[in-house]
Image 1 (cartoon, helix red, strand yellow):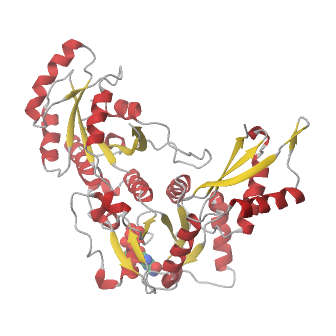
Image 2: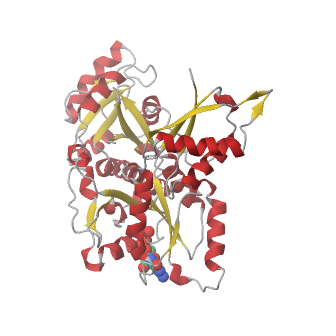
Length: 434
Ligand code: GDP
């Protein structure tokens, strides 16, 4: 999806506008810690076009001087967005700080739309003519307080979205590596690509896809590693903030089919590991858990089993994800990754014939009867797969309320027993038969 960033000096109303524009994130799993609270990177929709929205003001740089904050936020927008909304305020008029932001945005090689917030009444809308001096063409008067003007602004934003033609023709497997700083993501990338071929194929340019790296495995299958540029350390202030790295990971996840969640064996599992893994799960991506730095542990017969138990306990919702123990340093088991990526990608796109599926469910119900509530029994009439990536199954039933969580879980397990869905979440949706 295209990414839109809102930039502007403090107090122009970035967060108000951001909150006005974002819809509910799709498929939020309530008990995944951390993710839902993170509002700096959200999804929105206009005229049927879905896009991601970044509130650069939400990235905490408060320990930095004002001018650094402004600069860093504008640079985030330039790095991350396809379209930039530059926000100013009709109440204060054009300020020095607006000009500072404008100066940085001149360098952006992407569309910038100037919106003037707090244009709540006709008198304030008169003020917007001053804003032509910023040099971004017609300003869009909007009011975060009243919600006016947003439609016109969004029409203009959507018109600027890049076309995805290049992407659609590409049938390589798109995957990304996500994880905390220093778990070894770049080292794994380098090892996978061969030491001296590091990130040579990406050219930093105007399109999002310029940060991807393509390679072929020994079988000749094509892979696209998403957002390899994000793994490079450029040492800018904002790149060291946790929220920025979370945002970066979310953006990479959105563009991937398969996500490698990288953990560090030496340090064990941390809270931040769960945030990004939770987002990948919510987004319905295929997932592989990669435990890196396996060389650093003194191992006995139980080390691997113990580590696995810890992962299964901490990431209960990822029970479908395979785990690989690797070392980017010694290259141990790295050669397993391409085949595993292919396998989970296949499972993620797997389609099951309705007849086969219904046989499995009928057998399951025969051995474990459906639950009852107030004397009414759940009846499952028919099951069909309606989507892939992730595989999604609709259960036509007499009353969806009767589908208890535990029974749904049981049915999911039966499907998983009958078909290989390793590495992919599967969704079960009970629907009332009309
Ligand atoms: P990133 O921030 O996740 O991209 O992490 P890096 O790839 O930059 O690695 C962070 C540090 O961990 C570097 O000093 C690496 O040399 C080291 N490192 C990475 N992978 C391994 C590994 O498998 N074993 C050991 N011992 N060190 C590693």
